[in-house]
Length: 311
Image (cartoon, rainbow, N blue to C red):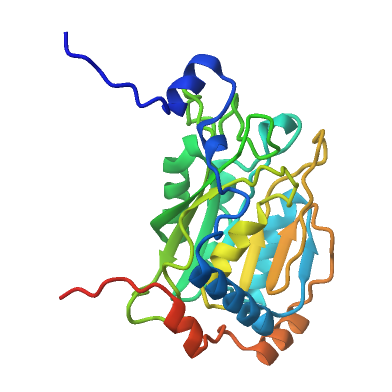
């Protein structure tokens, strides 16, 4: 019998047998992922400064869940456009996520009904949050909006007790079966509308600034309905300034509702957003002042890792 070698660090196997510690909880630098990379630290600092300089003020639109689609249709008629749209969030299983009680998640048909295609010009970028078991459903929703799936940003909750740990007993639509092996991740699916080239459209996107994997910091600080790091990833990548986050999730009966916070440079549409000050006229005036694009400096471009050119 051939002797096998045990590497001693098969964390996935240990979790399957014990159900105690998630494999991702063993990541050593989850709290400070840039530690030891001074060039990346400087790049992130400079990018944050440029994003802050180009950001409009915080906007929130508090809208009941059944009224979100009509509200977006109204914005379409008013001529509003957004170049970057994020839909959803990642409320955890501890809030008893379901279609009947606790957190009210949107169904596939409700997501498809959002007029994202009408709100976005060409080119534009969309992001959709789904549990790891619902990635295929998310791809179909993206296609219904007129976006092609390009990449996934994967978010790993640090433990099963995390407020972000995905639902384990429910699915987002009746046609999606409940899997035997439950996923422990959220996927933020990125879709593109129109043509955006990495090497040519550097005024629209900056690639290679962040990785596409985010591990929750072990300090367990509640950052909102989505981790703040995903906003940073999007802002570092997409240089378009008109950003919208739609949270079609009702937390009215949630045991531990996650805050839906505003952020400079973003319009947040949600039943639970903390600020309710959105005005299309004022927003257009703000964008006219700051511009539709985030400018990059020569130093940022020099520090930014470049994709290899095709010979």
